[in-house]
Image (cartoon, rainbow, N blue to C red; front, side, top):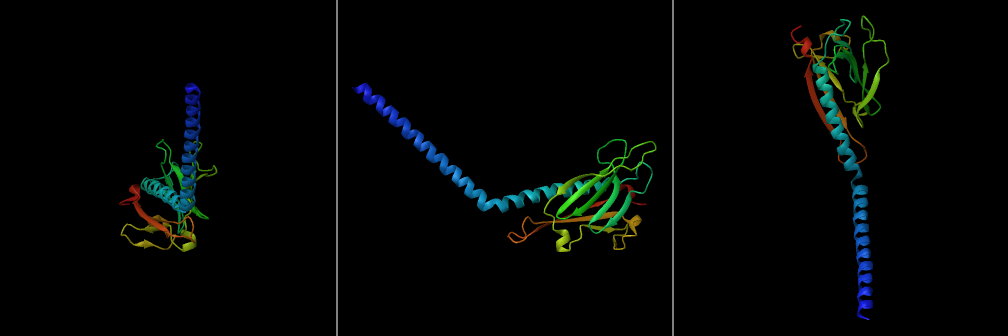
Length: 198
């Protein structure tokens, strides 16, 4: 009889243990769901900010490497408030790529054209990738690219692109403009090394 009681208690203990485990796991899952629901915006904003920081670092690094094209063209193709086209070696090969950074909606996009043929020509379509999302520059009236000449004077006449020696980049990020925290703005700058002193 004591064996039956012992087996019965073991079974009861097992059932109780499983019930406690399920209750604990349910509490953990409910807590995680509540956390993500209440903090989803903050998490998304943090992710967008991190992505924008990486994107800004990439842009600045690429601008520094601006160079004469593989066909001998001047390093800068065109400049605008939210659009910048220039040549740079982005993949450390023997050829120079045509790089295009621009705002499209709320995305900062990079387009790249690899030169092809002999002599090299930039006739292919741009291969595009999104560098940063939730960029609010256009809707907030914030200039993404500002250009400066060798004396440090800002270039506001975009037809004067051959005078550019230094570029300042600004990105304003906000996942949801209707919610706090407010937007986050990053700035960085780069001198085009191959044009310094020319």
